[in-house]
Amino acid sequence: MPRDMPKHLVRVSDGDRDRVVQRIQQAFTEGRLTSEELDERLERALTATSDGDLIQAVAGLPDDRIEDVVQLKSTSGRIRRAGEWSVPRVLRIDSKYGGVVLDLSQTVVDYPEIEIDLRLQYGSATIVLPSGATANADGARTEWGNVVCKVPGRARPGRLHVRVTGELTYGRLRIRYAGKWRKSR
Image (cartoon, rainbow, N blue to C red; front, side, top):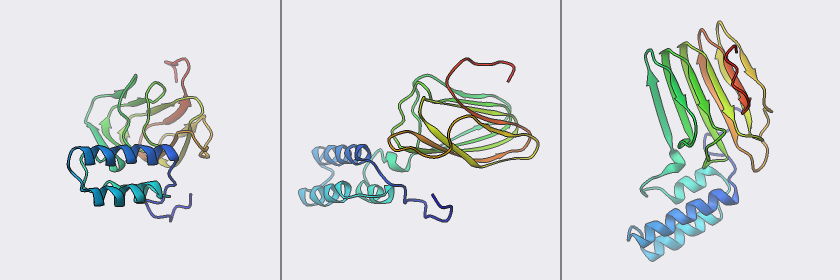
């Protein structure tokens, strides 16, 4: 995707549309929408081509996960997520003195594409992806470290794609598939 493409022009899948339709129908059964609003929002969701269209279809509804952004901060501790955990659409991590391990291999991600924005001063990050997922780390910068991406960088239809952005001042970024954890690396 070109870097100058607007933020909300990520193409959506049938699964994305189905999840939004379910949210709209749930809002109607809870009395949050009139029948006219239901029809209008369903039409918008079913004809959506980008995530921006889906955001408009669920605007004003509770639990708006389309704009799901989570920020994790640590001054001197380690940030680790593994097992079954809720992966947001955008995950922002700020850490001054500590490493980050994000294991996505055993969790279900509700989005076809997610963004992980890392802001680490003195620490490295490891991102573990499920089999078949892809990642693009072109938006990640290091000053005294390196970026090692051992997975394909180009998005594949029907597979999770992770965009990694941010800055690791004195640390390394490693992106790989699940396998044996190596303490030495």
